[in-house]
Length: 626
Ligand code: AHR
Image (cartoon, rainbow, N blue to C red; front, side, top):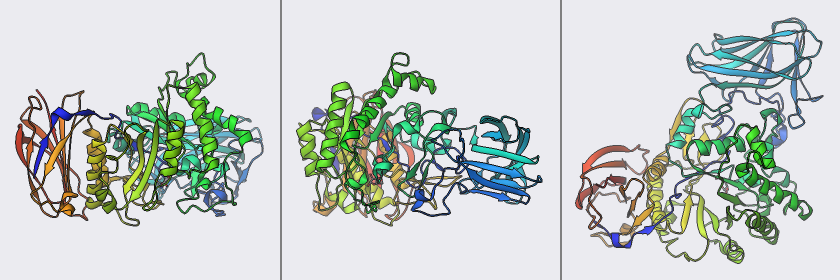
């Protein structure tokens, strides 16, 4: 094959093309990215989180071991109405322990320090000593501390434990005196969080995301953003402020959201990895409006937020913009942000309204209200609308009609389709009208239900990504979905990164995303690819893309070969400027079913050079200019 660059036809492309989509699905947040180690710390699990499962209640993950003691749940005079349940521990004779199992255990790291805290009050006025232990399965104590609770009203008590070994442990609390204690918000946090943030993120998982060089982060969903009922619409205001005042919610993926990972933490994470924040909010309609994805309709609810409540809902969205960007002294919500420890505005530029909703009158009425209000009050914010769900055999017609009518500047498209679809639709955006809205490809994956990510699916995405770079003048942002999945707690397959309490297991698809993120450009240099074999099926399986990163001046050549044979390629870079002869080459290759990791070496390049593309491979060559 010959790949010939045509530098005379370069065009500007989006420098935000590669981002990430974070949704709390597959235990991505609690028990995942959010570093809290105690499960159900606020005693707020309720059966309705999990389809009425009666074992999923305030005592879930907690147990009393021993005699002459009682563990019950109460709601009288809680710390905060948003956090109504707390534990009551009564001891007639010291000895029994209250245990917490963590999220599949508590994976300690030898020598690491852990911040322990709880809210407590004594009921009988007598001070209580509480021994706190981290105990391994073999009964060995891995860390220990003692607190003295003396307050009659709710008060926080804190201490630090150091892990002796890297054991899998559970937590034990033991009252040392006879009496009664009320306990809530029992928390254990590793001191080592990503960038050392208080209430922060698991460092290995967060670093794996940071390594993708995401230029934006979309959160909190997905379906989680619009919920599966009016009561389940994600409300950002419930997720900020002191942890004990945040309002937990049912996660429509069948578990619980503590909201410990809330809007402040999402925005901070964006800041920490230099990514644009992209919050997505419901367009005043929950998932029932579309009833797609096989979600069960709850209670037959249809439609959206009643129109008489829509002004307040729109105001909530305007308040979010003020919270993110408002002056810390002069605005109400800017002040609230400052009080939570972030006086500097977050410089929010994009906001998503709606998620894959069916475009009905109910949707249109509410979306229009929100869109017009943001446009009027905050013309500086780019609203990203949604054009609905897309499956083979459907299209986005209704969504685009509405976007055209309102002049929405950008729309969110989603598709989970087969590798074959991605190969056969490389011209999908070539055909898009450049005068219309830009596209955020917010969710996509080369998806074979029940099958794992392998090199074949990853290469079909790599090929499609060459077409997304080519269309980077209209496709402004893209994000693979879903991002994270905890082993044994996965509701959706495939995902980009699997993990358990100790390991992070990026898929081969992750490396494709990572390489595109690390080697993104902002100028597209068209290239012609000529294959000796002109069979259409062959042509679909070999693709190239050349971009320039104007910040560094580097040229980046991406080459994908999804054929079962290697392809000898002549790469021609005429009139491209002076280039350095030593270039870095990263290669991802294997058999179609394999899950390889990339390998980087140095090669010699020039204005013309040869490159063999192994069978089933993705090659990225980064060339420095002089
Ligand atoms: O990514 C998983 C789900 O797929 C998202 O929650 C939803 O938006 C889409 O249907």
